[in-house]
Image 1 (spheres, one colour):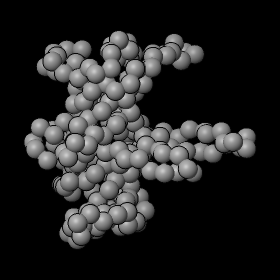
Image 2 (cartoon, rainbow, N blue to C red):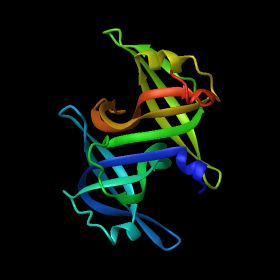
Image 3 (cartoon, one colour):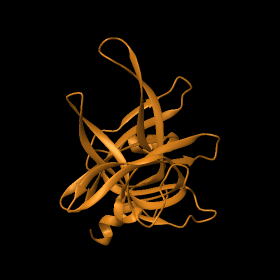
Image 4 (cartoon, rainbow, N blue to C red):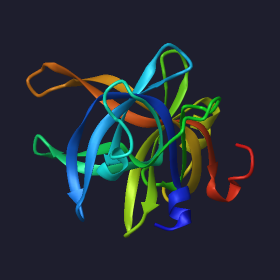
Length: 211
């Protein structure tokens, strides 16, 4: 992976490990494990964010439940077959386990990618403006990650006017959100969605300007 691809998708998280790591898959003899981090917000709420970690990193760090760690990496997507249908899954691919930086925001992400679906703009019953955005971020070996983002207020109005193919620079935080899914038999099931809560969005060529 070259430097530009790494800089187009950059994540820093600091939090507490939730649950024991579970084996996920193996690539060229390297084993990868899935876990999650509980990352506190400024409010009393917290986000539970999935992470994927190599055993080569785990050999130097204790990742048992309750351990406080900081990680840097990328927010990645992959498709998984669930109940006969392809489902977009999201995880933070950990490149490094790092020292937590005092005073640093514990949940940061920077993306450079392309709008790959028409943004969906709407307002809540309380007149709050929201836009749902799907951003494709290029990765090595001709792969792309598809990252759902949500913008509010003036950022939502700005995003609503962006056509498919627009290059964008986004900064924000990864958030987890529970929702109720109505199943075919009429029952409901609680599920968790992951998305980027956008703090700032700009067109690629306007990345140094003000939105």
